[in-house]
Image (cartoon, rainbow, N blue to C red; front, side):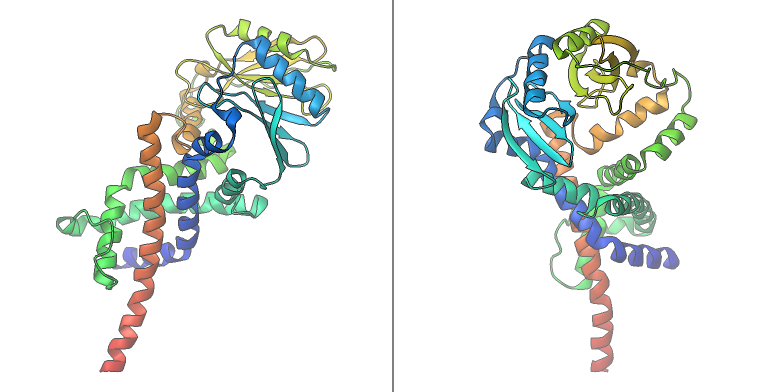
Length: 352
């Protein structure tokens, strides 16, 4: 147990600053939609979500950004702006009719900066890799903390804040906070790491829980200007009860456009049901029903909404917000108690 305590203490100290940053930024991202509604009047509007209306908005945005659009995430009933991702790391928000209400490059907007900090530590792909490693390591730290806690479980209290700066009180607060938020912190760390290492996670989940259909490769398609009202109507016809959530422009010549829909029972805010559209004809040429995927793949598709608080309503938003603060607190209090111990030893030696 002593060896495990030492490993837990040193690993936690090395990862503390990253855990603090990820916890605080993650909590702020829970409030992203509220921030948009507060700062963008268009975000408070109700957008008509018919294929015709959404298609006309897509056409208007194509005229505003010819040849630059990569993806278009449609507005939701609770958030009245479309999110556009453009070439050259540019982005924009548009109102229900496709009129641009905000545009920026990189992480120039506050919420984009916080997301970049949370997802990549403002360091691009190396930062993204580090976030994935820290997330998985945080999940392991949570489990080792549980093992260390068992022998002293009778000392458990509800001390979320240290009574003093003495190491004993710091350790007690760290221990109690870890136990109170054990499950959500473990889930946040594990799902965060799994999202970063998505290929490995999908393969592992599919191998552990096989069955269902195999996702087919996108079919080949022609080239042309997509008639978005027609294309979205074709996608809606394939899945009449689903909600249109996202349009993806062809990545290269010969590739189809992709329309994502959200069916009943899907947790992902943008859905995982796909309809492939031929740009030459604007007709549907293939589909992928997410509800027919392997159980492991369907479980993996739930990782993002669980991590990003995209399911469960305001109560779950609050739980994830508090869990992010708890993760930051665990890192901060743990690091402080780790640093206090050597100072106390030196003070005791000097006094002796």
